[in-house]
Length: 260
Picture 1 (cartoon, rainbow, N blue to C red):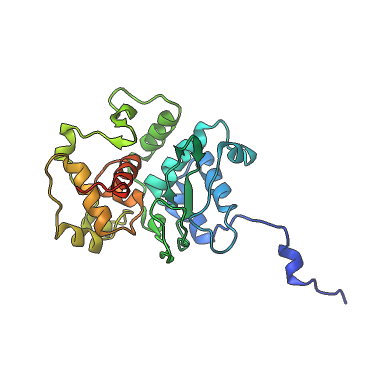
Picture 2: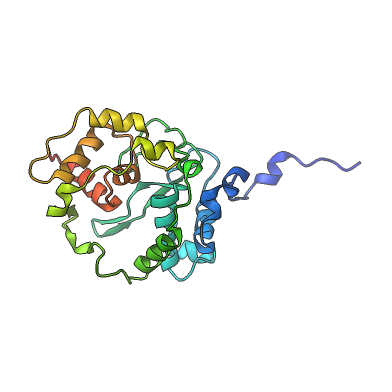
């Protein structure tokens, strides 16, 4: 009779991508183009099994080792995974600080987000798995969304898209268009299975609307961040139909002592 190996011998030095069958069979995963699915697998392979979900990163060099090339595929895939399907949650926005690059950090959307001081909003307690991917329904214009993400990553955005020049010195610039911008996620959308902030959180915020003098969008974003600091930037951005970088800029202003 052959001797059984000690279990530790199977795991010593080995890493693997933790992708449950439920995720692989989900509508969100099956809608991904192959290059976006490969990025998800590469991120899942960074997970150590405990205490680092939310502290996952994937540089262009690392992505290339998983066959994600050219680099635009990584950027476009992150857009689809974070903003649209919710398979990935962003916990820190990548940036340049003191002349050094600070990598973006992510968490797998089907696992709890582990606490870490590295996040844009440092946490000491774990957050439940968001599971936005499980509520996702493929929109009718999904192919157009994928194409837009691809073109944006390749630097081929249309002239009608928002110019990155609206961000100056790391802070968003308000425009007249912002004044008419309203929250995008509603209870009706939640019941339809769309990912985003929960109806209870939306109701709690709407019960106390921030003063909208000066720059309405900035103050509305700040109000939501202050009242619900545990929300990820992606959820805040989706609520007000804006982008994550604008949310991160407002959060940075609040950290510097700005009082809306």
